[in-house]
Image (cartoon, rainbow, N blue to C red; front, side, top):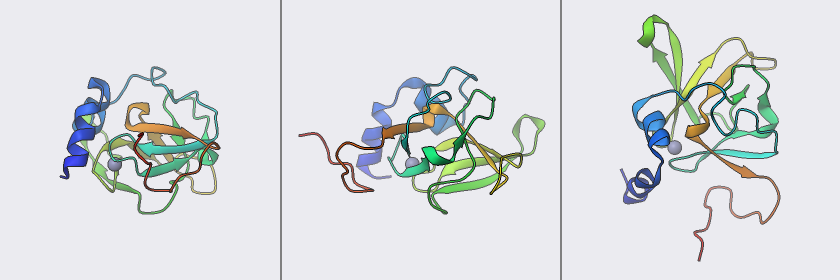
Length: 141
Ligand SMILES: [Zn+2]
């Protein structure tokens, strides 16, 4: 792990840490993004890799921010998760391994998938304003 990532981990709130590093799930309807309708990009809260675009966000009624696709294939890794006596697909950040949420096969077209994410795993960047590099947000001076 890079020192940059370690620094980011140290900045996380207890909830962000519990979700991304320990696979916890925030309570439904308590996150900051489930009802966010602004246009923009959702990044990994740990490594800031862009993961989802607001254009693929939809109302799932679940109380968690839900997307039907990732911003670019390969950004989100999936694996089977058999905890809680249920077979689910866990979604993690492919870049840093942060736990994001789960993927369910009941989403809308065209993918039929529902990426059920924790707000605590995401950092929203509204569209517009100064368009800096896609991957490297400049540090404030
Ligand atoms: Zn990440």
